[in-house]
Image (cartoon, rainbow, N blue to C red; front, side, top):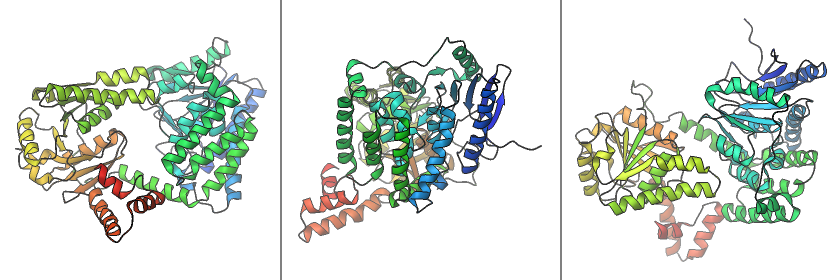
Length: 550
């Protein structure tokens, strides 16, 4: 049996054409050169069917569990010639423009991850229908690779959802949930995952029967002024440039290039926008910054594959449905907020009711901050807040699948608290300490089952810092390490497994850096010169300011 190349084009009994991405050789759909060529062919098939009146609408869908994971990352930054890069970009633009110019309604049916070029393909359609699944997200992470969305993403996104909402996606690369996509006008409809595929067909038929049509996003008065007038857009772009300059210090050219494209083309034709995208993206693609960020991307992907995780062990991760947090301070509240925002029920315990109240308030303020910054909808924030509770009794931690200890950095206090805690937990509950410097091996001596114990070192502030050190002590079991590692991934972090030793990994690397700053100071260099030099190099702050803050 010969497998048809992906994507395929089919016509159903309702005269709806389906362009189906389902690459049999990959677990996710990737827009490789061969897939893009086949998409052009499928689009031409759809065009002929439209011209022959055999098709009344076209739907683009992906695999059963994901839409499209973007362009082939291995092709990014491989050319040294900006002209060749520009030609490749323009070819992709031409293919997507073929979708946008089909003479019938077009619908992107998005279930699962929709990333980069997948989002740009969906933007070439008239409608984007998303499933309500937690796995469904939309993101344009090109800026994190040192480039910009150049297959129409920068241009079409801004025209669809407005300048301010588009800048938020383009400059951050963050994922957008279905609810958020609907609220900003990116999604035409969100459909329950259980009935998604059948309902997409009904959605297409309702468009054909004119029961539905494109809905203009309603913006409040000030929002309309900022997005829809030359003066308003000028203000938004000027503020964005200042913010980018302050945050990045000129180290990363992609955000500046995105702002340059939009400054030149917002309010103008799509063709002018596409031309500016191609010109700027071609320059970025051949830059050393792009190549270095692609290398960083590959390192992050390696970390997700479990570097340092035992591969010859039968131990699997424990399913996490409830997290306990021992200690309701800044770190405890941050961990609780992170877990609750990711759908996990969380209980915080402290020795005083006032401390618990402050911890809950801190967690909830972080969640409200996400709403203010448009990272979460009001509905999502209420659900996250409902997942967090706390108290002063240990029994509230019963039923936890893992408990993360986050009390003060005093080893005797940690040992006493963990010894008392253990009596309330099931035998297979993992216990992790958030210590930044204390011996995990020594803390484990307080436990009857030290094999269930490991380190899980979050960095402050928890909601911003991506790295988590997963620390193995001599008696730590494989199951404890695997469970903690998988939890870090679930929380959206980058876990690194390290041995129990002074400084673990990050502080051991940081030590010589801080020492050198001290040597420079003793040799007569000024604090201002040392810190400003470090910032020009790309550090978020100077080493001496860091000493003051920690």
